[in-house]
Length: 134
Image (cartoon, rainbow, N blue to C red; front, side, top):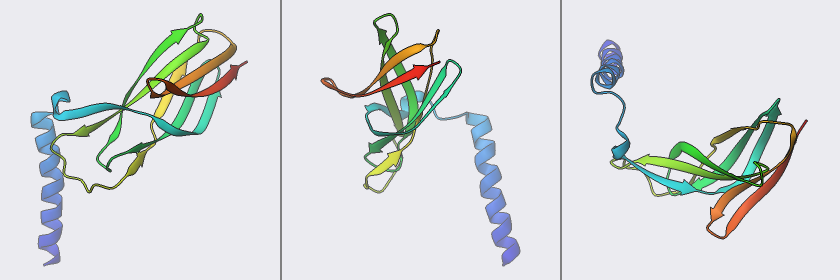
């Protein structure tokens, strides 16, 4: 019986891998993509001219995961407007419980200085933080 369970488990693992290699990863049209807003900035790291934020975003269910980030700059690049996006497989069946994701937002600046980051929360509201790069 143990041998049967082990073989079944290995078959499922290798079968999924084989299907992934044959059919490839899910296509983008299989996903719902939406802009999400951070409730908090959990960690910030500055290394040279590279800045990274780990933000906490609340999503509708545990099937959401980080997708990508979009940036817009103003005032000679001193003000950076950040939009965080999450995606979810359209066919996924998930329990309807609120969940969180913690995407990493990475941005590289051109020179040292003070930079103001504005994370989108709504069309009229942002969550702001200032970073000094030395």
